[in-house]
Amino acid sequence: GAVVSQHPSRVICKSGTSVKIECRSLDFQATTMFWYRQFPKKSLMLMATSNEGSKATYEQGVEKDKFLINHASLTLSTLTVTSAHPEDSSFYICSARQGIYNEQFFGPGTRLTVL
Amino acid sequence: TQLLEQSPQFLSIQEGENLTVYCNSSSVFSSLQWYRQEPGEGPVLLVTVVTGGEVKKLKRLTFQFGDARKDSSLHITAAQPGDTGLYLCAGAYGSARQLTFGSGTQLTVLP
Image 1 (tube, one colour):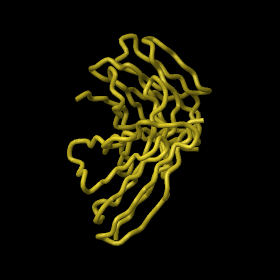
Image 2: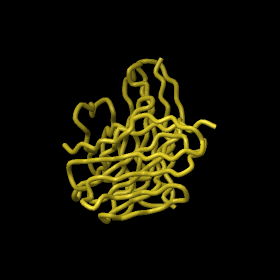
Image 3: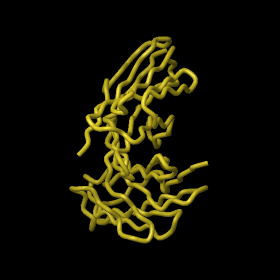
Image 4: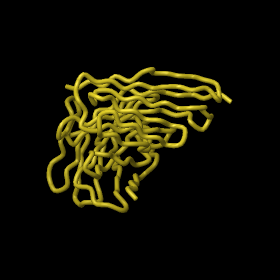
C-alpha cells in the first residue's frame, strides 16, 4: 500500500515553456501532498504544501506564480513550472501524507532539464 | 524554525563494516522517520519511531529514538554494497503536518 506515482519521470523543455508534473496517490486518498526540489547529493527542499480543495501553502522564497499547484482531487496534485528557465532544472519530488504520524510516501521524482 | 542536524554528511566504508548515522534536534519530535533514497528515485520510508527510548530493527538496520525524543540514530551492521544510498531522517514537531528533513547522509559501501 501507500504507492505514489509521478509523471513524467523526466522532461526536457526549451526556456520559456511551461511544464506540468502530476503526482498521484494510487491506493489511498491524500488530502495533503507535498512538493520538493532536490539538488544533487543534497536533502529535500520543501517548496509547497498542496491541500485538496484549497490553495497551496508555499515556503518562503518560492514564487507561487511560477510554480502553480493544483490539488483538484484526493488522489491528484499537479505542479506546473511556468516560463521555465535553465535555473529551474532540478529533480522534483512529490509526496503524499498518510497516517497519524505524518508519514510521507514519495513519488519516484521528475528530472526537469530546461535548455 | 526547527533545525534537524544529521551526521556524518558523507560516509564511505568497506563491505562488512558497521556504521551509525545520527539525527539531532533541539526540539522534541512528535514522530521521526528514516528514509533511504537511491539516485534518480524518490525516498523510501524505512521506519517510524514515536516513543522515547524506542528501538526498532529492520534486518541489519537498528533504529533508536532518544529518551527525550530529540535525537535518533540508525545503525547498520555488516554493511553491504546494496546499502549504498542517501539516508534521510525527518521529524514532525507538534501537530505540524510537514516534516523537517535532515541534511542527509550519503553512504557508499565499497565491495
